[in-house]
Length: 271
Length: 123
Ligand SMILES: C[S@@+](CC[C@H](N)C(=O)[O-])C[C@H]1O[C@@H](n2cnc3c(N)ncnc32)[C@H](O)[C@@H]1O
Image 1: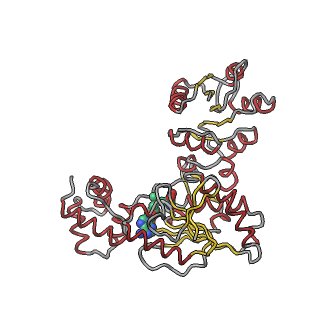
Image 2: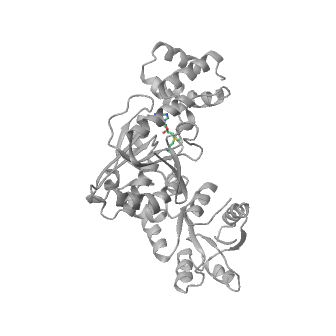
Image 3: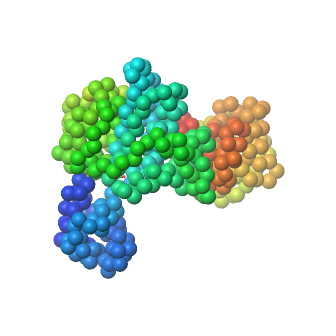
């Protein structure tokens, strides 16, 4: 059933206030296809009833479900390949030199969805830093979605998910077979702290960040929101740190304090 | 670029060949390992082979071992494409000299991403 125009604008506002995600006019079909299952599983007759319930109880569990349903969680291991190549060939060797004395390394992967991106970084770190155990590593991965964080902590992926972009040698080395699924081995899982973090709300204190991945999430936000978030990242970064954005994202003409730099086969941003 | 598709299922050969042709490969195919060994003879460079595991006459894994042990095609990247999904099989394939491993069922994107991983530039 098509969503009524007042209901759509209610959903637009709700999603924007809670997650900053901008639902353009014309995305009614998206709201319909993603919210119908939410209504059904809450035992409601349709999107009209769902919105009526949300109006009554805007702070309830149902609101969280709606936000989760409206976010895109698309991700994969080694997505776009190049940023991870850059880590392996350029950045990690440079950081190992630069931080060789204090041996600390702080990594943040924001909007980490179901975990493939932080686990890819963790595997690359294991491969590239032989004495990693002797480093004080803090690796924080965050997302707005509780459901995605739960999946990430479990580290269990379907056959289709491990088929996508994951080199077979890493499958053999870092996963265990669980029935028809595959689970990241416990020692790799324990490298990463998965935490809830809404990018438009307060951020917890973080150590000065050497590496920040925030890919394929700014694209959903409006310009002022992008600018605010990039500014906050700037404050959180170590002066020698590296920022990675998604393929369709940039700091150019949003935050001129960042400089775009070639890093091996990829682009990254530095202060 | 040229590729060799080795699978005893005609339907699977058709699917894989089509994916590769869309990527501008010239595609040869073979219905088992033995047939594949024959197809390699007297051919110019072949950059890629997609190889099934379970086939009559010569299994995919034996084809990979043969090609690597005899160093028949050092330039050829080999990707196993198989319904075998146990860890031990993936390990065996890598040890034999396969470069990548795809578990059936797969999508076109899976093939594309794997080719990217083994340094075959597509699109
Ligand atoms: C398309 S995924 C990107 C996953 C991964 N970074 C990648 O590039 O493959 C977008 C993620 O952003 C998260 N997200 C959306 N709005 C958010 C917000 N306001 N704060 C934190 N995360 C958010 C979603 O839950 C989703 O997991």
